[in-house]
Amino acid sequence: MPKVALITGIRGQDGAYLAKLLLEKGYEVYGADRRSGEGGFWRLKELGIEKDVKIVYMDLLEFTNIFRTIEKIKPDEIYNLAAQSFVAASFEQPILTSDINSLGTLRLLEVIRTVKPDTKFYQASTSEMFGKAKTLPLNEESYFYPRSPYAVSKLFAHWITVNYREAYNIFACSGILFNHESPLRGTEFVTRKISLAVARIKYGKQDKLVVGNLDAKRDWGYAPEYVYGMYLMLQNDKPDDFVLATGEAHSVREFIEEAFRVAGFEIYWEGRGLEEKGRDAKTGKVLVEVSPEFYRPAEVDVLLGDYSKAKRILGWEPKTAFKELVRIMVEEDLRRVRDGKV
Ligand code: NAP
Ligand code: F7E
Image 1 (cartoon, rainbow, N blue to C red):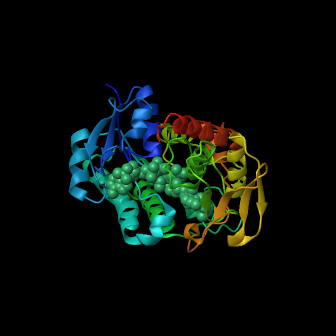
Image 2 (spheres, rainbow, N blue to C red):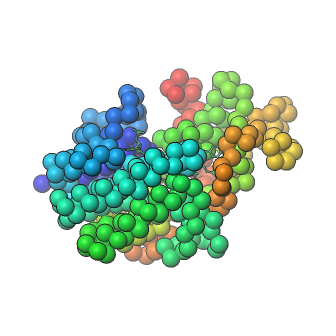
Image 3 (cartoon, protein in one colour):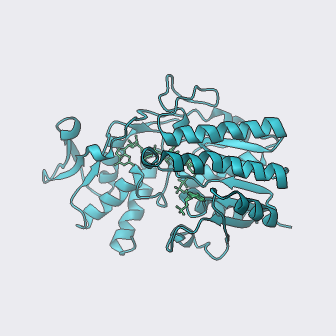
């Protein structure tokens, strides 16, 4: 009998990569979809697995819906990847963000406790929970100081996962993942916004890239490697919490410079703050501008992770370094734009 996995957030970046991995491992994979519109399965299509994932309708906002789905499927493993995951939007929709991310996780755990307590549970926690970090690098013992409604909502989900493990002996793991990116990343996130803009600029379909805080630093890894870490957590002897990261931080500015380099442009910077501009070294043309529209009410300046526990216990390590990640993303977007596939 194949193992049965239920992935919430199947339309998202991680949902697609994780589904592919679990299918390759022989799992029967169910993907929970809240039916947010047509065209949303493009990631499963790009990975060639849209016919292999069994789609079930399940929204984290509706308890009875979750109850019936889990009762019917009886999954061995649940990966809770569904979320209102865009930090900027969480400032506009804080209550919805909490309902989905915090209470949605609790609803799932309550159903597991009631219906199938031997289900292994993975919670998609985040480095955003560290927020205004006092010391770097950050590990499982570091202090949490969330800086957005998103981060606060995820902190609730993290602790309720720990609590259900301790109170009810549920095999529940919290993966504290630092930013992980790929060509399947949503275009609202800064890395993919940059890679797509660079490709469009290269092919004359866009004039410039407009961004917010150029100095924010993140620990950016490659998403397919991170979903493998999620899988490893649920195969471990005992449930626990793990940081997955690369151990390197780079700024948005560096990401932009490297992305343009991959496409054959050299950028130089001029001005400061909102007046700062990135120009093409050959022509002087403005290719990058800054707008307050993309600044956040409270920013997380820098995140840098220490993945030594995951390495020691799970044997997990990141393989794709920063420049390689940027290259993968920009080259894929160059191909897509050239072939009219965006
Ligand atoms: P993503 O691309 O934004 O995908 C999230 C998915 O959740 C979307 O497919 C969305 O469905 C679904 N969803 C939203 N609200 C829902 C609801 N009420 N009921 C059911 N499904 C709902 O996110 P991702 O980058 O793959 O990240 C996966 C998870 O890891 C998220 O929980 C995120 O917060 C967390 N995380 C991500 C990173 C990262 O760097 N990527 C790092 C740490 C943690 P629709 O398509 O229908 O909108
Ligand atoms: O922002 C700055 C922005 O939106 C990264 C989610 O997956 O990772 C993600 O959250 C940084 C921030 O990701 C723009 O202010 C500058 O400092 O790509 P992002 P995020 O907020 O780090 C974590 C780990 C998650 O858990 C989340 O779900 O880049 N930035 N200019 C910009 N950001 C965006 N989006 N757009 C800009 O124009």
